[in-house]
Length: 598
Ligand code: ARG
Image (cartoon, rainbow, N blue to C red):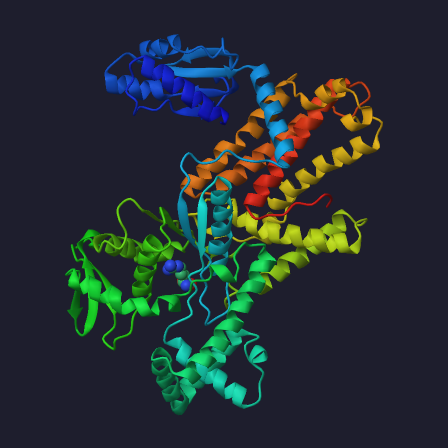
């Protein structure tokens, strides 16, 4: 149980005893100012309003059922303003909580987290590039944010099913396989022909526009492909396999947990599409309109009252993005047995997602108790304030962007630490470069557009990956120093029990230690919150504040100096250890690697 949960539990109980109905929460928050204590419970105000009571009197009544001081949790609890309950935690309580956490961490071989109250099966749809072209920066945000979320959800105890809903089907594949066939006929190797997917797509398109014979063949190939023609299928499979290999290379480079087993592409639903349309027709939801099948949604009507149209089948019989998404939702509800389905997709697809959710609910494909959430994100902008493009205005390939990140980090690392061995330099530059790109994205409020800037993401100051990675290495270096110095007090070396107790107890002797402990203990609550709301920037802010609290502590609290008593040194070293473990775990949850030196 983390501190917030503990306070929530105790104050909730006192509120019940003071006659407050159970549905009115204590509303525990971190106090904005030190004079208001460490935490405050703001729930008495709302409760008093609802019960038509005087808020200060209600707060007093709640306190009469609470004995945080007697239990050793708080040093002082008081009522402020109209009825806020301010809690000043006891140093001994914090020291004890930190000590316990230290022992737990040691026993588990690393920082562990409290789990969610209710474990759920959560399907997460993310990355999901279109295979006709190379992955571009538009898929970067989905991949990075989605991957941080799956790590977080798993860590708090949920069962996560990753779904990479790759776009591997659709009319453009007729043109692409016709082009592939021609190039192979000229003796080209498939891997080489498709080395540059973007370029290949352009070639095919130019060919299609310039040569009517080729265009006819391409159109014919779409029909053949969809009707299961062996030859076209084989060409398509070859194209898809190579395109998937490109994405997988990027996932590895990005340190993302997606692999082949998570791919459940659009084509996997081909056999379900006719059934989706028939069901919607039978339910009276879909209607024919000029030969096409549509669902009209009054729920999403525009300002003029015109219902929102969703095309589920074209007049030529072809199915659409929406049809596949409906089939996918039915599959996720029925076969994957999801309790919650999350979609990390660009905000520009918000209407599409609303339409899908509404149709799926109305048709009963997804029962009411399954939560459906589109977690949108804004556009990645270049320095010019326009959507991120290459200098010549083309789409930036993800592979090129990541290579550039590592190159830039290499220059930086060579400058900062010329003594690193060439192998270490390479390893550190990779972790810093990739970490910087990921963290820059994760640390911004997801729903906003975000400005891509090499300079700010690679800075060693401020809320950046390099700053946090550096903070981690600094703590590690304290341990290297401690170990190489005479202060090394490993229990197995001294072999006596008093050394054991020395190494296991954390004490609070200053406000900096207290602040650091509070911050370390707030990790669990932060992660649980992100698991619920899907905004990983809160975890970034938290880690930045943790690193800052550590720097302040480090400035004010000497550790290895001669005049520091062994017990105090040991306590402070353990705080260092807890901080490093928390930083590392937090970065790991964001998909960012740490290193011993940089
Ligand atoms: N392939 C789509 C695109 O690149 C994203 C798919 C997102 N997932 C989904 N179930 N619609 O725009």
